[in-house]
Image (spheres, each protein chain N blue to C red):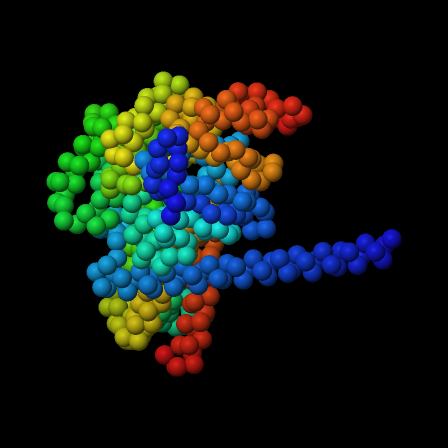
Amino acid sequence: MSLYSSSRERVLALAAIGKGALSRFAAVKEVATLLGELIIATFALFRGRARFDRADTWAVVQASGASALGVVALVNLLVGSILAFVGAIQLQKFGAEMFVADLVSIATVREMAAVITAVVLSGRTGAAFAARIATMQGNEEVDALKTMGVSPVEYLVLPRVLALTLMTPLLYVFACGVGLLGGWVVAVGTLDLSNALYWDRTAEALAGRHFVLGALKSLCFGALVAFAGCFYGLRAGRNAAAVGEATTSAVVSGIVGVIIVDAVFALCAFALDV
Amino acid sequence: MNDIKTGSETKETAVEIKDLRMSYGKKLIQENINFQVAKGSIFIIMGGSGCGKSTLLKHMIGLLPPAAGQVLYGETDYWAAEVEKQDEIRRHFGVLFQGSALFSTLTLTENVTMPMKLNGDAKKSDAERRDRAHELLDMVSLSHAKDLLPNEISGGMKKRAALARALALDPEFLFLDEPSAGLDPISSRKLDDLILELRDRTRATVLVVTHELPSLFAIGDDGIFLDAQSKQPIARGAPKALLETCEHPFVQAFLNREVPDGDESNE
């Protein structure tokens, strides 16, 4: 009896693994399909054939850009300050406090401004995209678009992905400025560094390649966060829990995706000695 | 495509369903669905809850491909046609969804204007489109609510607004999914009258999914009855005629609002 039950458990475990693998494969297929449709829609946009609401697109641009300035500023200011605090404690041990500016500037411009901004956008804008599209899915608005002969990818996904992809690098530049400012407040306030020394060290430490790397990352992060939001929104079911599930999945996938892409960038930058 | 004989007159077929099989994955919903809908008629898709009425409608309006079979508009099988042809066929559709499906961020006027804006009415100016939208909203007695958002109006008004939007492109085919669901008897009756009036005015072919008895008797010229148990159609004809002539016990129980013999389910 016990032999039978243990072999049965093994079969069930294998079946669960198989089912899991199949559902992952189906999800990958869905991602590839949406990506393909998005590329086609982008070409249609360049040929002037994409059908979407310009007013809605402008509202999305505002919501993903200007409206996010406050939260992006607050978070990046604090992250810049934290970097300065952490760096100061360690560098003081070696009498190298003046290099706090190097640490804050390089860490902010290469990594933190892009990653932290993307994480904030994932929780804010990516979640909003998922919730809005999932609600439309539940209300049959997406079906209504289809019966009007309009592709939901053109009408809903394309404007959102484009808006966030274009806005994220701008927010990144803003986040860099605010992050450096946060570091400056701590460095000047607690380490008795002069203003001139802090900004001189910052200018010396930073190079154009750091900004290019950070901006490139933020471009990819913006696209990724918007894509995750739209993907889970379109994939949502039609029950009451669907909007919440879509939003949670979009945020989690967005953040995990951002970290993975950041790791790939770090590997590439290391290999290319950037 | 064959013409349909109804009584003494012969009518042209507007849409034909051939050997349709509906399933969700491996779960069979319905099979052996065959019917023709006469041009200008009101055709009712009837049946109990969960028998696949709305799914059949989705196959017909191009939202969901069937497991097998054909949906013929003229000589063209919708699901075997090229995407461009499908788009062309779909331009002749007007659809009223069960939950109205009005765009929640747009006013009623903008909702009705939207299909015109998105579907080749580029020659019309914004003012012309707006005028047409107001005309349609007036037709469904909503001229007083034209600048309101969907969440500012009642369920019955939403249905009428969605009907106005469905008529925006002067459709040849009007698909109505549970038009009177959730409406009080008076609003439901008014909507039925409106559907009859619109059919007479526009000469559109109307396909209605409903299990509301007063509605299906009031407006149905013809229909099909889907059965969830046998997973196939069990009756075909006008609802009133089915009530008088159909001998199938479930159809009789359904149309007479009775519990069929041997049914112990709580549904």
